[in-house]
Length: 251
Image (cartoon, rainbow, N blue to C red):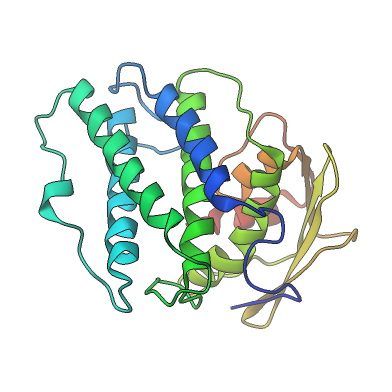
């Protein structure tokens, strides 16, 4: 589990739907290439695999949100992409899945009860989760294309918070806790975190403090690092073994 003094939900993204629309637009534009290109940060994947994965996530979330479901539901068979679909059809399919989930999220209030796979059983979870699902895969696509990786700073900072709020509790249920603490330090503006293993928990505070290892860099580099993707702009100071253990905690 993760213990944190922060309340659930986003404190950085005041308008997560607009943030989702921006990063989804960027991701859609970045897919205008040969989808056979491999994705280095997702070993074994091509861009087509990334398109299919992200589109399926959108379809699954849209199905839950549209139905206001309080238990798991399957997306409609009509949302599936045929295995023999061309790249052009795959891109059109992706755009439609993105449109459906964005429309569903716009109609969803943060406090609406809906099923999620987390402890947060409300609309705020999906409104936030779709921003970061999209942002991390946007970075994956940009790296695959050999482009400079740049992500919105507010999105990146909130993505780090979301990782500790939502993703780490899932990871520590099945993976070993790191043997030492991790300090994250943004170099492009405010933002520091100290994550400390304690018993079976990870305690997260927002403070300037020394950890067994420190990751320093712009917010987007720190976001990618907690998701197991090392950006060239990331500086690692301290225990390299502990650093590798934190990288391995990514889903």
